[in-house]
Length: 309
Image 1 (cartoon, rainbow, N blue to C red):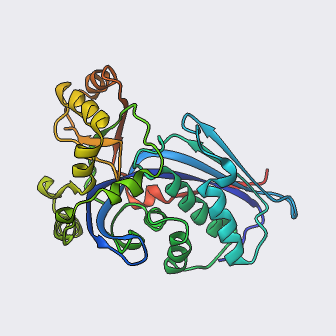
Image 2 (spheres, one colour):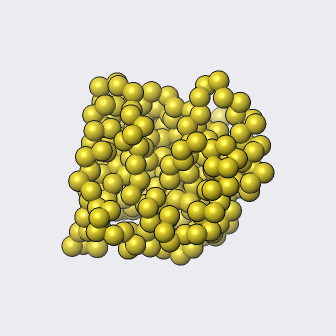
Image 3 (cartoon, one colour):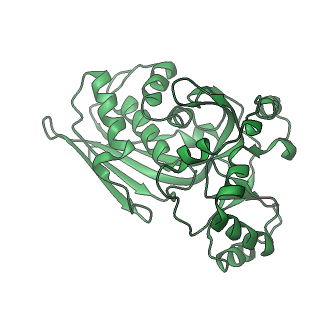
């Protein structure tokens, strides 16, 4: 891939994700867990801009938007992704990166991982790197288990510790609400969820693989296979969260599903549902509410060039 000298930067979306299914199969000797999950990107998105700087200028990462509290731009995944890409490419990271944070964090929605993947995709384009998806996935996996999924976007079956990605057909567009309760996630949230799993909560991944097979055939995903191993953990270890979820149910929420390790949840709504009324009712119960739809692979990985004027 050749470099167009008139292209001085790129703009990308960094979409959030939901886990349509998430099963934990077993602990691994390396300290991680073997998982099987089907994830889909949604149109709740951070926005990432990467611009070239003169040689020797170094790397600047700036964060903007509503959800920057508690995030150190000097230790952000987007910065780490840029440094790692530069190391592998044998380049200096003379870049200005701006991340507009629109995805609540931490919520289980993958915002930081998606930002890192956007930087990987953006630098591949900006630097004209003729690298395979496998090479990008390997770089992404050094940054986090979810990062390879976001390099691909769309809908995918992910196994291993989550870093092995099998892209699926785009799932039939689904409309939903994301509800984020006003409860701090606390330190090491995901590690705590894994540590609290009981032996009977490890499964063989069968429901996840069945769901993936139906999506691959363009069949409607069966709601009976929407599952998340961490829901049982939250139910018995997070009474404050459970109380919020109970209020959302009382306000009219049908079946809610945990986003990753939470605390955000999603619920499907019909096309004819009055979303404005639902949003009002859930907000009255303290939730931050987003109306979203699943986002296909092409839209999730699009790159817009910035050209010299």
